[in-house]
Length: 330
Length: 109
Image (cartoon, rainbow over all chains, first blue to last red; front, top):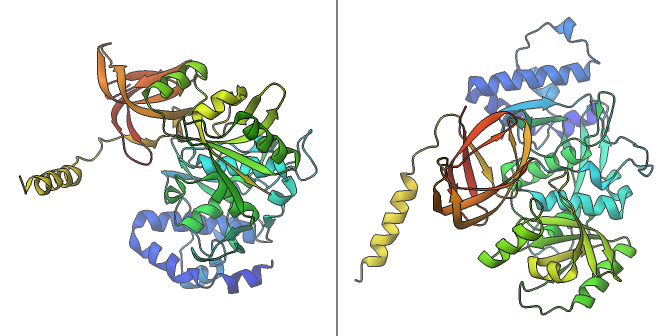
């Protein structure tokens, strides 16, 4: 998309930005910093021509209006912000397919939106091209990010909606508030999970509003496809272990995306979870299903927390004990 | 007796409205998120009403949450202190809210 069409598309953002600038000196400073960053991008880094201080004027606002057309302001939820304009949506690492999209690119940040992170992991694992196709870079350094949104509760189908986002992200405690960057090559960081999360934050109204949700709904946002939600009725054992294994193995073989959510643990279940999977198993947490061993009757789970927190080869009996639901899409 | 539910409701509402703001420097995290403490990523999970030890090592019972520290998980409640990234932190409060609990942490250096 050209810068020109951006200006038209984003004209509605002008009044929002103006109001925000008038509200407080802190916001005004942030607006100025954002403006400087965007001008650097728009002018190819000739900020020295413009000087150190840039006043936010109505003309400038009109120029900048396309950047975050429906955006929450960058940094509004955090204590600072980080500029990832030196990053790129996708970095192709050895071992990844041609898109550069990999489930391991996704690492949850300081928000309780594990369900969205798990959904990104699950879709990236099943269909990396689908993730790749959601994001395109614009000439002005912003990105167009597509999510599939149901306009109304009663809407039968989700339709694509494009959110234009800038590569700046709020921080807290010296790290990004939301998702961490993925792979890196030199100084170039891979930011596709951060861009998708920011578009989702715009969709929700703020980063904080992304907290708490369901993996199935998030996978639908990313794919536009309906989700099969399978409840396990925690502790009652109503779904046979063989059926669970067949469901999950079949879904992964068919290149479908699968997430699984734990329930709220009672005292005994919590004690068992801490003993069997210390540091890895959380209640009310969502994981991506990464592997199923039907013969060995185990399920391996990708934890959005990252690091060494994945759960490999969990016996299906434990899966039944700790998990409340799994969602399949594709 | 008829007014008891009303009195209790008003009492709870007053308690919520008058809850003091968190102290200066407090950081609030939500269950299942990954906190950044001294730049170290620390997943937070498994809120419950359970036993824990405060800074003096005294066994207490109350609202708890688990910090997945690099050297192993720690079940903590109000008054628990721990070190991560070379800095000391103190749990100010664990709130067993729905759908997810919250924990307020303070620097204790």
